[in-house]
Image (cartoon, rainbow, N blue to C red; front, side, top):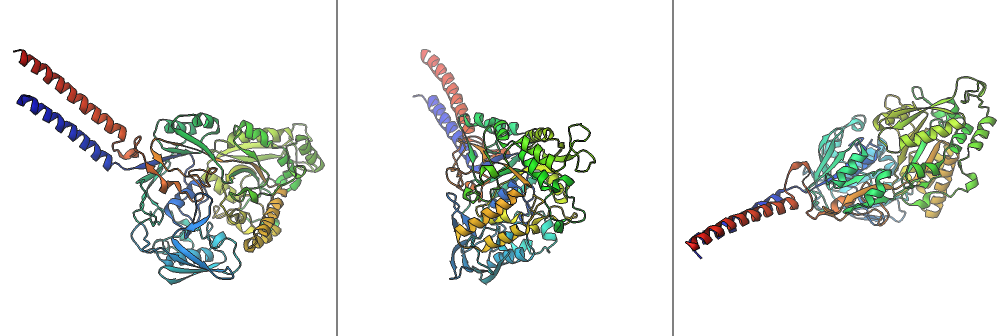
Length: 600
């Protein structure tokens, strides 16, 4: 081989090596970003007051809890606490924290943070903590040991799944300021913490270097907001996002059949309802809080509305069969908490019966225009039906329901509204009907607590300080709630809960339409380790404790760096291919020249 050939071969080797080196460096420097598509905007970063599903997903990632829940079956497992011991009477538990716990800003996480969260949550009745801590008192024994004592038997202990807050941040706020705090400080103890929020566009979280479970492999999690669900599905297909939540029912089968995408319907007790504003007792009617159309205060009128709703048609036509007709609310991810109601005692779809009830109650159409008036005469009955603009199903359901109501002589006016506005409208009582839904926790107590009298809105100046959106409460329900809250016998407790839910059902103030899973989908070319909670039947995202995020590992496919740039595996392959092709061309021209030289 001539010297010229040696130089060329050496140059080619250097070129290829440099190309691989540059590509490897780019790959090593790229952030691993998980992008999740959503259509429901986050309501609040403050875990004291938010109520929407995206809020809870954010809190699950930023704030760890004293005890955690197993992905497989929701079993209570260690969280911030590595162990605990209970007293003989079951009222006192002593938790030992993990050694060396730190907040994401480097400040020590100690027993004082648990004491702060439990005691102030109880004293100030924090909305999202109250049902768990209302009977608890916490005391720090030392930096790593905290004693939690209940004043009553508590069937939930030793589970302590309230979000623990950093006292050095939240402790500076008084009782009024703490509920109005934006909560965007980014200080947490969970696997990811907030780094950026662009209203109406996205919110971004970064891996917490101080997370007790070890730094996640995913560097960032971005929740990207879409105004259109079809656009969100298209983004998943095109690889712009890695997973999406709330797949449109009409698109689910198509997404499910797409190669490289897994679609699932995760069951965790979710349900949708139409709430009727009229069940408040006189003792809980307040100045400045409306009580809906007067007809809704009549239980017979509400029963007629219930009989005028065809749940089977809604499931078939709107949900494309992806749901189950419902009776009562579902208070838990475990369906055994739902009472069985004999068919003959249910509000089954029956327009003739609805008309019969209205006729007997004195609601007549005296002017023959097809709409009934109040007993004794007056204006036509026309109900304001607020329709969530952020829901894929609210509008078509409203069209069906308003049509059925018109068939029995009840008029409606549909009023589209975004979720943020609707929350305040419900708090002020400025509605007659609305359609929304809930996803319960594992223990039924939180969901049950939402419908006690104390959870009704009472201050028009603070219209988001409530949970009871049924605008209904009942003294016997409240008494039973307190009874189940201290009943340690599981069978007896379930019997009490069944009685409570039946009582609420019979009030006809909450028309629970269907039980529905969470329609989700994710790509299989970028990450592995997706966890369903509970195993086999639950969702992979937006679950009770959101275990997927810390379990994901990158498999190198697709652009894993989101909008931050970076080089993917595919890009590296392309770079190397170009380099090799370039090398081939050089070798080709050198070979032609050498052949000519040889001829000379």
